Image (tube, rainbow, N blue to C red; front, side, top):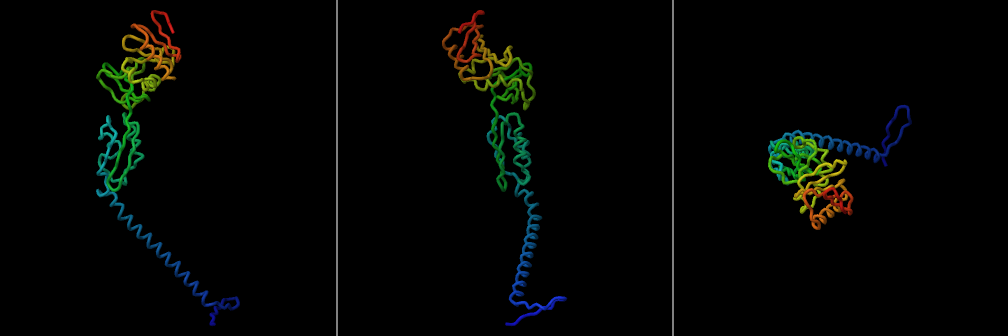
Length: 268
């Protein structure tokens, strides 16, 4: 077997097996090829990015197909404007989270979900709020409120929802009337058959409670907005079984122990 000797300064001569030397050279060549591949791949990625970036911002990948659903009261144009979609921007510039927050700020919107569908689509699903009562907002003007006190819109028509009284004047659409929440907690849960009878709702002079005025001049001391099903059942039972006159007051502030006041007298 032949051997290769390599002199080393200041050290004894060492004999090296040619197979080991060839293996070292093979490893060096393999590492060189890997470095070349990595460098080449990086160059290709850079070239692709340089070409793709303008392409992604071209009309080929713009939000040309936009579908908006669930908006019964909010104009589609308002939703597109809030989300920054009115001018059909490139999809790469559409940020779903930011668009959702902007749409949520619209008065009627409870929540919005924005999804991007490459290469040219965007869908916007809206869930709107539900009005449960109105509050006077000026001469002949009422603000429609949802259960949180959010002002949804103003209207000049005769209110078809229970009217809240004894509160501060509501602000513009999109603002919140926080002082109305105890009343709205009751208004949001009014049974359908009973809702049409409720004309006005007001804070109780006792504090923390709710008073109702029903059609026919009947009053209701409702108490705090708790144990609502039991209190509604008490009111329904009295209305169905008693002959009430204008001025009578039903007291259901203590559930399951209702009372009726008539002419200064109270009877259970």
